[in-house]
Image 1 (cartoon, helix red, strand yellow):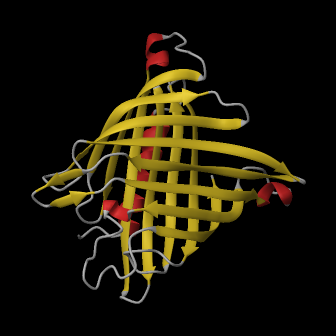
Image 2 (spheres, helix red, strand yellow):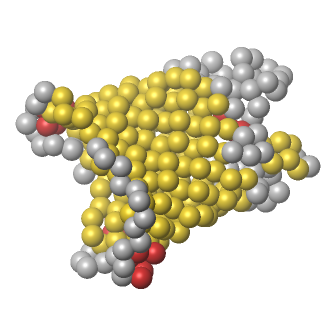
Image 3 (cartoon, one colour):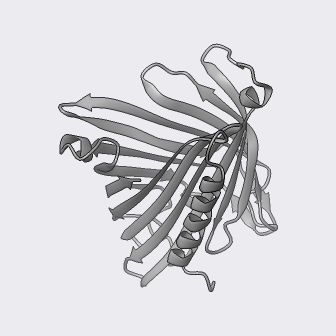
Length: 266
């Protein structure tokens, strides 16, 4: 690809800031942006050592919300030094906001149309759509569950499978600061087979545990975090852990690792 991870990140960030500026006022209710640096080892399939810089953008606007992340991934493993990028754009439309009425039932506080576009280097493009639910769970800053139907680009495996994606944030007071536990889980609950191979059911659990260092040092709360990102991925990339791919996979595809984290919000 002619587009480098850094160039792709800068292009998306520039477009996103321009769009946010044009939405300012009554249409855009809030937004948050962040950059995260991660360093981890013991990754599967890819080179074992990885450094990742992630740009994240989240907003709430008049008729829904949007979340976007873009990973610039740098490999420093046994194979070769290399880099790649991967991202997801996830806009949701709120039926409660569209209809100007509360759609609450038990713990459900809103019903949404959830979509996600997965993109990156290589043959990774996928399109997800389905119902989303905002939940009111005591103690949580937010808790949402999206139920997606996955469609892949072209005829590669991954079509006609269902994915359940909860996302959450929980804040615990710790001394003079806070500990934030947030993250997501992607659970593909069924398999897909076609002429090009099998897409195996898989589960990706990816929480972050972060200490608000900025608040502890009186620099400003919710601006600077340090901590860990835990990454558990059963049957990573939808490859069955029991399968064997020659010299590429020698010890299975179940990933269980953690990365050091530094995160700045702006």
